[in-house]
Length: 455
Ligand SMILES: Cc1ncc(COP(=O)(O)O)c(C=O)c1O
Image (cartoon, rainbow, N blue to C red):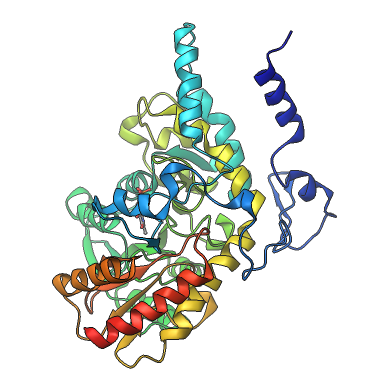
């Protein structure tokens, strides 16, 4: 007779994931429905769970795991003994949630049991199912994605492996791009003999001035052949109009490589919407998979432009998996990806985005008129998601930023992080998560008004 737990598992499989039935029952053609490589996934915008951005999240979507509390996040991020009372900063390690619990641990146990029985859970084979789920979710075909340990790994292999550069060509990146991608672009100088051009995104930024800025950059520097773009900046939270810039670049014969580490999972889009042949993602920020999960996307007809990873021979040259050879990785993490996607779909991408923008708007609206406080993202819904940084005028050094973040943590129990690397000086970033409440935003706004008077 089957064991009780096995029966429960079988029943759960038959039931499917939360919200699945509701999605299935929606009529074809519902807004947001997407069809990918013949597979149809109904993903209606804003109606999956009926969550309005103002409403508190239903209990099933709230995090309950020990390691997802804001205070725990604060400790993990900065090893601070004294944890923040309210977290407005959760992105580094993702949000976690009751839907996925800690799937990594569950799968790790499963893998150890399999090993104990003598069977060998071969990571590459195990990844096939997860790749299929990902391809469908992000809107591309299976042969366009390969799983990596994160966005850094995905983008490093695409930047380093891009084989169309010749000595004398140039590549370009901006101040708001992520450090490790900037390093990879700098490395191309020695690796490919190219010039590396850097630029600073306009501040204050607008939808049009960012597009105009990149247009001028490419017009003034016709030797640029590869351009790094970041969909959502981890420094200021600026959401860059990737689709328009990539199209403009392609018209000039320039390829773009896009860092989508911070966007997919909280912004609702398909990879094809970006109009870029090379995109790197992670899954541990906004999708809530365990640490160490990401993937790369290479447009099918552009695979030949990226070298095989260290001359990989495990896969054929026309197989995208030959573009990343990680070795023995943590299969338990990869096996958890479907559970994380289940949760993501159950809440609904559009619902997540609406909720996060609402929490962001709520604090920004209360401080936007404070004379000595600058909000780093414009009041244009196309230009931000959850993350938004601020600067208290004149506080542009690391020491000054640390003083402000310490004040917010210690006096107000609000956790924020400083970010350097912005051409005009340091900023402080606020990142609400799904589990933050409107009251957290209000508390933050009060804290910022007090900080602006003090610093
Ligand atoms: C914009 C951006 N790109 C890339 C990364 C690196 O992502 P990963 O940790 O998946 O390597 C980060 C991490 O914070 C990021 O913020």
